Length: 378
Image (cartoon, rainbow, N blue to C red; front, top):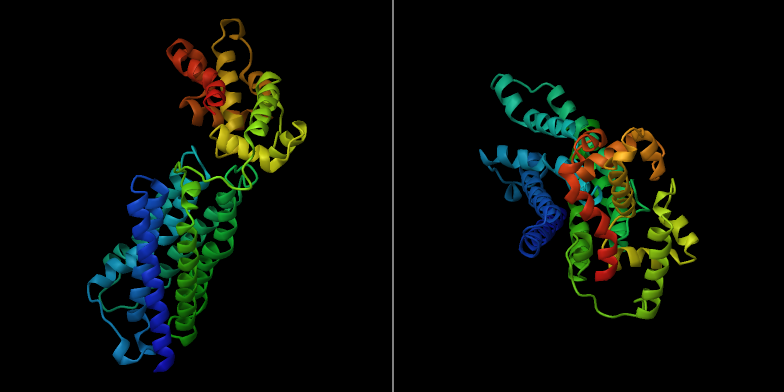
């Protein structure tokens, strides 16, 4: 009985931590999409932990068993939403200004339907549920986690927010690994009737409790302001760049990046730009993030490259200039990345923009003054 009391205490700690994190997200960042997703994930984790008391009842002393009745269906749906929500959370956090792939949303909806409604409708009452209803949702969950981890790794170096770069490590090592192991082990590898499945769930709950502990420490360190893009006044510290250095760095950056059009250079990275400016990379990251307001280096490049491309596409004297030539002249190495970046920035394709440039004169003017305006404001 005593080991089960320890397990029960760990579950209480995991539930309490998840509720603290989720509630804080809703109270402190009620309008932030990523924060709401994190809160949803926390509450789904609570459902998963509570439902495990019923699922593994044969391994739990009768005094600690529970039966949720009809509520178990809704709790099961909630916990099986987690992998897809984790994928959407990573996209919202790390793939800024990019459109979420619709095919993944379709697969996510299908996975949710395969968890409860479809088996309930197609499997006769009292009959054993075919393994396919466990296999397909599990494989889809692994796909969602894999996509989320890919988005977490992608453009790692381009991230200008140091706190968010560290968060990527945290996600890769802990959250993603936990979901992969639990889905792979408890749903696919280990049979449900074996006690090792119960111990896998115990390990998962313990990991959730530890994750919540570290997340709460980070939240009370005010790191969530950087992570979720919430503006806050930063207290002076020893790492703050002196204003005289900041002004000199801004002048050097402006002269080279804008004046000499360094953004046109194909394959430009934050490291290569720092080398060209003879500036420490950490200081350049700080300048771009805190002085110019960009959270991603690629967003800075795309913004100014697309601005110049718009000017060329709207120029009557360049009406016959191939779009590929324009794309190459502003720094893109092929047409496909240019088309994607242009569509994300302007909402239309380059050819559609060229066909009606007068209707988008204000867009060009706004883009044309944006870089200088941000430097002035800083």
